[in-house]
Image (cartoon, rainbow, N blue to C red; front, side):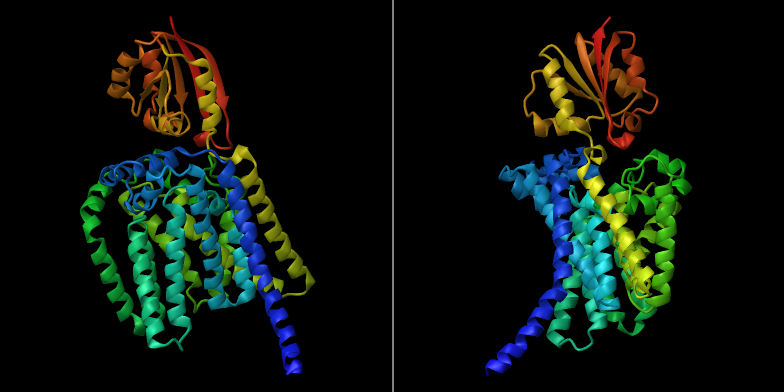
Amino acid sequence: MQDVRDARVPRSFARFWTEVPFWVILIAAALLRCIEAIRRPLQVDEALTLDMAGLPLKQGVALMGADVHPPLILIMLHPFEALHVPDVVVRVIMVALGIASVAIIYAIVNLWAGRVPALIAMMLAAAMPTIVFYDTWVRMYAPFSTIELLSWYFLSVVFVKHDLSVVKRRTVWAGWVLCTIASLYLLYLALFVLASQLIWIAVRERAALVKPLIGAVVALAAFLPQLPVFIHQMSFGGQSWPWGLEHPGAAIFRIPGEALLHPETDAWLDPIHVIAVVGLAAALAAVFFFSRDTALPWLGLSSLLVVLVSLAKHESLYLDRYFLLLGYAACAWCGVALAKVAAMPRPGGLAVAGIVALVAAYGIVRATNPYFYTADWPAIWSYVALRADSRDAVVAEQPSSLLALKRILPRTPFAQIGVDAGGQVAAAKTETIKTHRRIWLVLFEATAVDPNSDLLKDLSPYYRVDRVTRFDRATTGESVTVAELNRK
C-alpha cells in the first residue's frame, strides 16, 4: 500500500506543475488590472453610469435610453450604489469579470487547439493594453466580454465534447441561451455576436442548427420588452463620433490598433496601427490554415458585421470598446500562430517569447503610467476648488465632466453650468454665465458638442482670458483645458 501511495505523488506533482503557468498568468492579469483600477481616475462615462445607477431604478433605466445602451448594467450596479459602496470596489468587481474573461479565452482555445496555443492566447489577453484598459471601466464592456466569451465557450463544449450526457448537454445549451439573453440586455452588439454564432453553425455544423435556432428564438423573445426602446435608440444612435462618419476608411483601418494596443488614440496612421493590422492579418491567415474547422476563426466575425452594418447605415460604430471581442479573437488567433512558431527549432521559441514579452512590457507601461490614463479629474477639480469662490461659476463644456466632480466633491460653493451644444444653446447659456464676475471654463472634448467654438465666441465680448492650464494625457480626448475668465 505504501508503494501505491508513493507512486501517486509524482503524478500529482506533475499535474501541479502543469497547472502553474495558468495560475501565474491569471495572477499577473489580476495584478495589472488592479493596479490600473485603483490608480486611474474615474472616467466621465463611468461617472455617468454610477450616477444613473444611484437613482431610483425606474428613473435610471428611463435615463439609460439617452445613453443608447440597454439597462442591465444599471440593474447590476444599483445595489452597490444604494449601499454607497466606494467606486473602487465596483471597479474591482469589473476587474474580476475581466480576469474571468482571460481564463475563458484560455478554455476556448484549449478546447479547439490545445494547451500551448491556449496559454499563449491567455498571456496576450492578460496584458493586451486595450483589454486591460476597459476591464477596469465601470461600464458594460467587461461584463459583456465575459458573458459573450462564456457563450462561445458553451458552444465550443457542445461541439467538441461529443460524450456529454443528455443532462449536461441540455445544461450547456441552457447556459448559452442565458448568456445570449444577458448580453442582449448589456450591449446591443450582442445581436452581431448571436448572428456570427448562427452563421458559424450554419456553415460548419449545419446538422446541429435546429437547437441553436430554437435557443436564438427564446433569447430574442426575452428581448421583446426592450425592443421598443431599442428601436427608438436606433433613430439617433451611432452619430456621436463625427470623425468616424467623415473618415470611415481611416476609422476602420485603425480598429485593430485601438482594439489591441492603443485605446482612444488620436492618430490613424502610425507604427502601432500598422503593426496591429499586419499582425492581425497574419494571425487570421494562420488560424484559417491550421484551425479552419474550429470556432476560432469565427470569433471575430461579429466585429466584421459591426463594420458592415455601420457602413451600410452610415453610422459611426468604430469605437475601440465596440471591438473588444476582436481583441480576444486576435489573442486566440495569435496563440495558434505563435504555437506553430514555438514548435520550430530554438529561434522559434525565442521569437515567441520575445513577442509575448514585448506585449507584456507595453501593457505594463500603459497600466502603470498615469500619462496613459483617462482625464485626471481629481487634480482638475482640486485646482478649481482651491481658486474658485462662491461668486464664481464653473462652466463645463461638455457637462459630463460635472458628473466626475459630483463623485469627488458632492457640494461646491460655486455655481455649476453645463454646456452641451453650440449655436442657440451656447447663446442661451451665455446669458446665465455672464451674471458671474469670474468663470472657470473647463473644456473636455468640447469640439464634440460645440465644433465651431460658439460658446467661446459668445463669451469673448464679456470676458478676458487671464490664465489657461492644461491637464494633458496621451490622447486629446482625455486631456482637459481649464481657463480662468474675468469680466472685462
